[in-house]
Length: 337
Image (cartoon, rainbow, N blue to C red):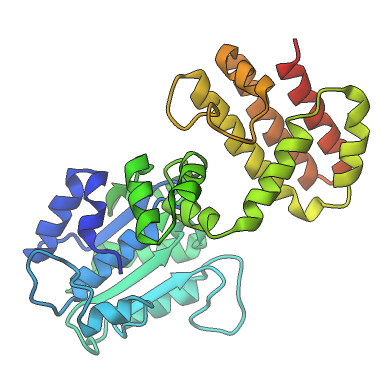
């Protein structure tokens, strides 16, 4: 379990949060927001563990050693109810939303006497996945919560939540992590400098993405292939041969577009003179390094919009080969003057 003090670099509100937990003054509902992979669910787990922790160490909450903390490592504490789309509480059928029946069951559980703690906790992963009916059901309980009941919600898009739910929660926003924290985390997981230097610029402040990429050698092989085929192509006569190689790989479209988006983001960082650009990227063609030094905002926006449009075209069943050909052409036009 990640201790709460690991989140201190996120801002002073984490220290305040720890003090409130120690003083039994924590608000009953917290909504944690931020980009994918920045640690929203880990923070929610750390708060839950801190609320349930039985340890006596005052300078470390949660202690990470007691029975409650060990149970929270797997979110198996009997006084914690987890709601998540696709993991139903009340039926065997997974649904595309968190249904009202599951929210109703969770509310019932926090209204009962705790099994091992006086505190009962509902954790909702991607709270925006609750149906509107489920959100309305939760709202009534947030307005009049049971004593010693806590609600920990995470969200990628709080705009999909009812404004009344958001207004009844303390909002915590997790920001992208600085490179030194990403480095520290990767070192703790045993990765060497060669891998760390590759991962940090690609991770863009995301712990989750950093760990995923560091442990996935196939990602780097795939990325090298994308860089060679889509960003190194300089002749129109080569477009057909590249698109032909990719025409039957539509199932890899999401990964393909993600690699493109992250690379364009790095080009943008270079253009702005920020760290994490493409200057030291071994797979970045020289033409793109030059482009990064001269690109205007409108050029970078055009590239970003091209990838976004490609995603939409795939969803609307445009032949994948045609989609890839248009992308290559757009990239070529951007860097070839």
